[in-house]
Image (tube, rainbow, N blue to C red; front, side, top):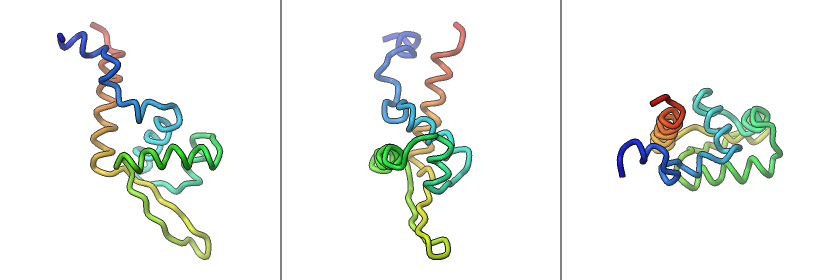
Length: 103
């Protein structure tokens, strides 16, 4: 497969990140460095249940580090990209840029 045809090969796209909700969450978290569940949910504009499912998929893939703590008496869950998550995110951005760039 030539490098040009590989650029368009759908199997080269990280399907885990490519979901709209997970893509938005990864973008937000990568920009923030770390963010709590509520901030991510508000930024992505989705429900608690939907956000929870998508963040769990990213966590299970090893893309997110999850830290549970308390803010006063309230539990708080903080998400940050792991090294693997940062590498996957950067590779995804490179792939998307290659798809969108001119010949």
